[in-house]
Image (cartoon, rainbow over all chains, first blue to last red; front, top):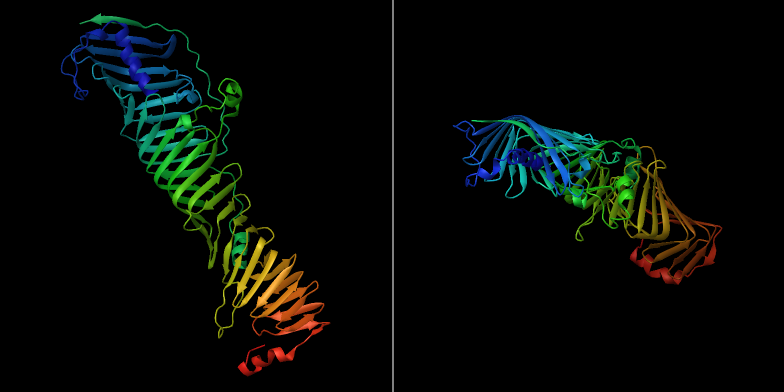
Length: 207
Length: 307
């Protein structure tokens, strides 16, 4: 689910025709702020990710910068709605809204970071937040090394980090975990996502 | 035993169905297997009961709506589940310790069944689970703690009744041991009901019967042991049989009724009521008739056997 956010952000660049210009990248994302201005900056970006004929994510960003060197993407105030595949471990959530003040990614190394306070809200009623999340596309894994707080119908949980397979097959809360479960909670079924088709739209300005 | 049952009866109020608080080092969610694994220093607490252990598995209940919706085309496969689903059970493994009021229990495995409102403790094959309440210690093959009533069921219980019989200070402490196939502790009735192959041992006295009720007073002290359904009592070479046996913890006397018969070497005594004082070994038979063979007891006089 989280990876879809990173994938969707990356896809936005690909959709406007920049992704195929990526230079061979290093194995690890460069965490330092880029010294050069982006080659392309997109403002008021809207994007959608489609897979197997269905929209799996769509969202917006105030600004999306792309640097050909390293195939690096930087987004400000990213917001996405994710529609988990019915067979995935996240399907129970229904549609999930994710936002982050900052999102960065390397197309070449398939790594990305959402930071500045990442929040999610699910159609089922779940809510959660963490300071930042890391996406490792090579291993299709997500992780976080900051406090995670989440709650939903009949539960609340807190940990000091997490790791997860992007397909939701397992999610591990790490670093000490605590929470509450209501054994007899009555939870309505996950709301089905209404995945309307969306096309990417942007105002591009080439620098 | 009395103290145990009384304590069970008078301890904390019946549990409400509140939330379960948990802590652990890690929590791994496995939606497709509909479970979550808690690992390292696991602690679960609910309504005054605390369970600790090395690791635990949380199993989520099937979602009724989804199960119905997909049953036809996904037969045999449950929908994925995550936090927020109803919980079927918690299974705690490794050094399981339970604390509930003044009562503690230990075992190798513990299963909290949310629907049945039970916590079942079992051992590892080498050591049996143990339930402690004050000085009383109860072991058995399987201890079932009922969370809504505080009653306890025990399979193959083995119980030492340390406080059941007040001993005189100048006499050696004689623990009373009880074994049976099953024990049910009824909180509301202040009753411990042993069933199937009940054996009570105290010093040289052994009593066997199909079932026995142990009654307790409000302070947790044993008042009576009531055996029914055919009883056999042995004390050394003395043997007695009857339909019923009642043990008075205060007088430490066993009263046999229901065609009681006493066999003591060659002697056979039959009466309406036979009372045996456990400490003095004195026997009183009401409306007695029978056969006495004094010659069979001559060696007792020489040896100074206490009768």
